[in-house]
Length: 113
Image (cartoon, rainbow, N blue to C red; front, side, top):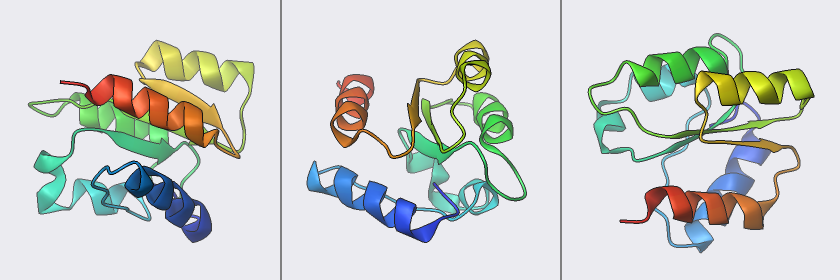
């Protein structure tokens, strides 16, 4: 999930090329309002988004009956933001531009059955 369409499309394409099913959202409210959200197994979300940021989205997801992992991406990576992501329970953290190989490896690790 990213409000920047080009980033969203690149991430979706990378995940689809690894044969993952992908639903992309422009903002947190679209994800939270989607009736298919119960089918989600993982979320990749930008931290800086209009309306609801990634940290607020993570807190919302943690309240679900079946919380799922959230991986953060951000163009504003700093040690403080990274530490907050870890402290708040994010499953991963990637600065932009995203290391596709690293992201795909983490997704595979988190979703292995």
